[in-house]
Length: 493
Image (cartoon, rainbow, N blue to C red; front, top):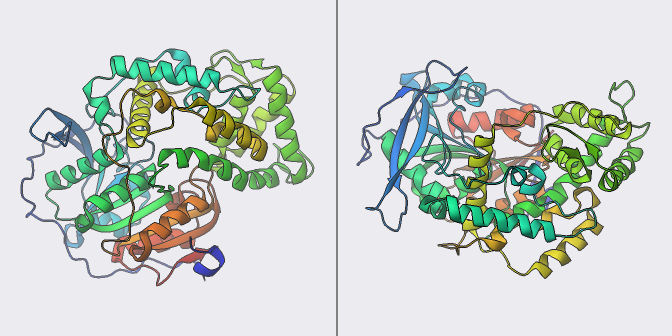
């Protein structure tokens, strides 16, 4: 791992995007391109320029002539044909996310020079509607956020988590169909290359966010010479043995990195949602409230589960840390719970969407890597985690449905190496709750000479054009527009 103090060089103020000569990389020339039929996209509020199509791909890449599935894609063409460089694939987080609307949404936050140079391409990964979709038909209780992320019982027991994981795995085996066995990170990367071919591009650029960095890593390993400019934003730990288990464990560090920022905000004079007079008081206040809610949950009609218990509070904390703009909602919930009253339960996604997202997430996590089956291992690790990291209550070391998953992984997990073109720019917030800097540095080390890393002195998830810095945004925009990266790893204040 690169020591942060030695490997990062201070970058001062943000600078403007520098334009350079654009060499088009579209290959009228990519053989085997499908004739895509671009039609109006479904949904409201989309940019009228956005169009959608589908790309046929093998369900099983070991049987390329067998059954096919469809991958839905969306596109807004580059705004200046004379400056066009190629296609920028917007690779979503998750697993269980899609980027179908991103060309109309986050893509429009890109600077003009980038929007002119690239067609902006979104997609729904295999299994995600409107691509060929999967659904496990789960019970309503098993769609609760605090069930899907395995929060232990108040006394640390994991028995209920083991039972819920078995229910989910059994339901996916019963209702998921053949496709659910073929949902994985490596297959998503292979699908992206079929999308590249269908678009008629010799190479593609990628902007992967969160779990999307892992998908982009897989593409970098499978198709290194099909990549143009690659931005990895909010980076996953690429551990080739633990894979998603390492990501779950990262919440321990992520919560600890972020809580002091919340505590400073929640104790600031003049803050209408102030919780305490000093930052030092906020942590014990939060932990005491969570413990009280473990013992005495407050009924919360309309929520799932229909109560505010300690784990729901802890999960709300983690969710709020993704974006500091959500601090007020967390503080108000804490204040209300301390008074024994609650606001109306927040509206969640439609159940059909949750069913789809959950099936894809479970399939990806469980098909990517083999999880240990011994409950004793999870009981031991949860107990240690609860003692060392009380904010996350043992959840990051707990069991998932993969413990009972009925199928073995079909191939080894992604193994990130330094072999391939040096065309990667990583951007990372120093205080990220879901993909902490400690894991990003592991990826930086694995990519070696292929990458340069920009670390933002910033808090929250989504570093580029989100919760990062003006300096970091300018650095990434300059790279996408011109290909110019910093000469070495940099630190942006």
